Amino acid sequence: MKDIFKDLFILDMANNHQGDLIHAKNIINSFTKVIKEEKINGVIKLQFRNLNTYIHKKFLNSQDKYVKRFSSTKLENADYKKLITLMKRKKLKTISTPFDEESIKLIQKLEIDFIKIASVSANDRNLVKESEKLKKPIIISVGGKNIEEIDWVVNYLEMKNSKFAIQHCVAVYPTKDEDLELNQIDFLKKRYGNIPIGFSTHENPENYSAIQIATSKGSQLFERHIGLNTKKYKLNEYSSTPSQIQEWIKSFKKVKSMLGSSLRKP
Image (tube, rainbow, N blue to C red; front, side, top):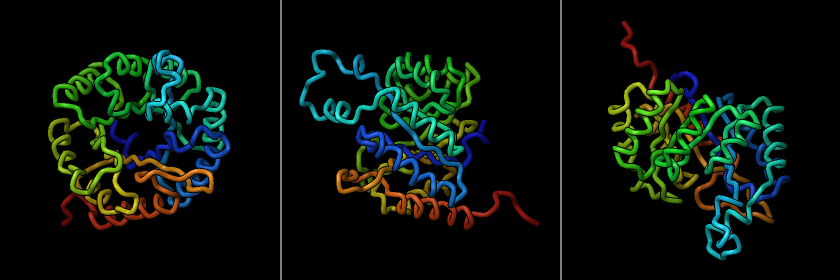
């Protein structure tokens, strides 16, 4: 189970595609170059929401900032199909975060390789159960979840013999350095010793120390938000440009080299 997640880099496009198909394709093209140049096991992640049912019909036209963010960055299912096709043509594995059961159906229809369950959905038991039914590798962020909630997810997926990993995550965007709580990786490794542990990050994109610390603590997979700065679209404070992601990956490689073998040499 561990090998499928080993040194996996999840580059989360999320809403930074801005609901613009051409912009989304440019993001995929730009970050694929980094993935290929650095020769990493990298995937570019999409997020799926069926807004017709995800947002209550009374609030579809609401000016609430969260409703507006989802509505203004909406892509159609046909657009997602084009993006997944582009990724597959570039020989990338595919991954998506579903926020509702309808989105799980879309993951199945598009034959996406990995399922990523967000922290906000980690205690949505029905979503976890429906995701498991697809028998795909699952990655779950556990930001803000208590021990009992994490235990349930781990116990349920182990009972189902699922291939899965859990990720330490601080659900603050962006995350201040003093709030990173990287010792939680130690806690998760000790409590769930046979489960791959990852690190989903939202710190300043210029912070290249956090991934080095997480790696030295045994994190096997890593996730960051990505996007492109253009005249039309400005990146948020916690998303990385291609050059920042490349430096982030180089920081990982450097500490891996420094750590060396875990076996005692004669």
